Amino acid sequence: MISNIEKIEALLFVSGEDGLSLSDLSEMTGFMRPAVSTMLEKLAKKYKEDSDSALTLLHFGNNFRLATKPETSDVIKNYFDAPQLTKLSPASLEVLAIVAYKQPITRLEIDDIRGVQSGTILQKLTIRNLIKEAGRLDEPGRPILYATTDYFLDYFGLNAIDQLPALPNIQPDNSSDTKDLYLKQFNEKLHENEDDKNGK
Image (tube, rainbow, N blue to C red; front, side, top):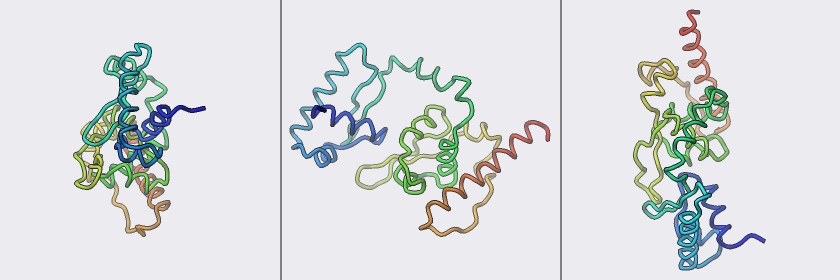
């Protein structure tokens, strides 16, 4: 049987870098806010005292989120530098394309276009320095805005973001077509740059 603290932990895990507020956790679990606050304190203490755990609990603004301890940074860098991860997955390219064309953009807006949760992919793209935080939206929750980096331009052989092919007009309510169009145009630009580098 899952414990109450495990419920809190599970929700924080799936929320990714956006995290959840005390009110969010209270509403999702049905626990009173003081009880949630106590469980968060216990969870933070658990991570701090457990030398075999790589996790820590961060509190920023009104939100709480899980993160890896600073001591793990070297091994995490090895993960993203591994040869098998040199090429971006279709899902990562999809998210990167949406950020490139719609920046600055929030995770929820990306999720709405893709129809699936994108938090983990955004974390990976951020660690690989292809995207960055570009401020926060001035609305409840202060969601993070994402934009591409200078390294993104170098990675794809671009001098400026406006070198991406222009997107034709599309229906704003057709998220599936929007996603496919972003990815199609982005892949065309990617292959075009690869051909240039190979002297074709």
